[in-house]
Image (cartoon, rainbow over all chains, first blue to last red; front, side, top):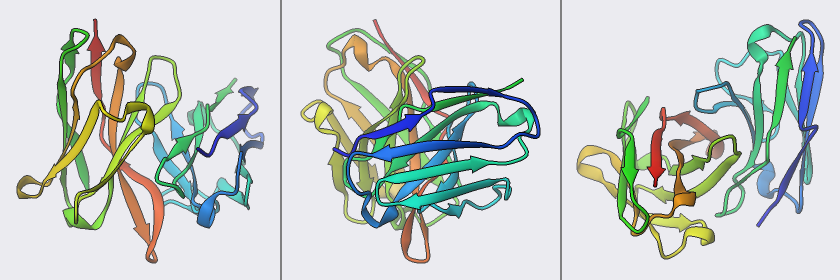
Length: 108
Length: 120
């Protein structure tokens, strides 16, 4: 099983700031099949990034993904109040999908 | 593209349970469907996935023996069945489609709204 460890656990930032979230895998993620999701309270997750660095359709360019192998990063620039959510990484390169434990972002 | 899930369920421990996820707006057999669950205040957890083109399945070993996933091509629906549920299975269950872009998988791109399961 590929274990994904996200950091930090929680963040509180102001509108307009920039933030990066980390996702580290216990082994290489096959084909860089690494995705990022945003989950607002009471809603299902929403796909932001797939293949480590490709933005999903309709996702603003404030969201960007990078990394390969075992280390991946999601960056949000120019934070807005609606960015308050939990962000999850997910590897889908093996038949046993796994998710990180999530990073909670609060916009003050 | 829509994934419409069945309504909330309440079960007692030891009972069986079947959830459904009806898809529309795309060719049913071209995309894998995955079930993911989320306990109260918890992270996302993979349950099972199926390729509707040939019904090939992968099930999380943590649930092997208690979970079955199947499709009905006649109405583009995916089912998740639990043979026996426990209190720890109480969660929101989501079905989600595995996307395709340039012949490569592209994450879980469409999600249902979820089915709340309570086991008590």
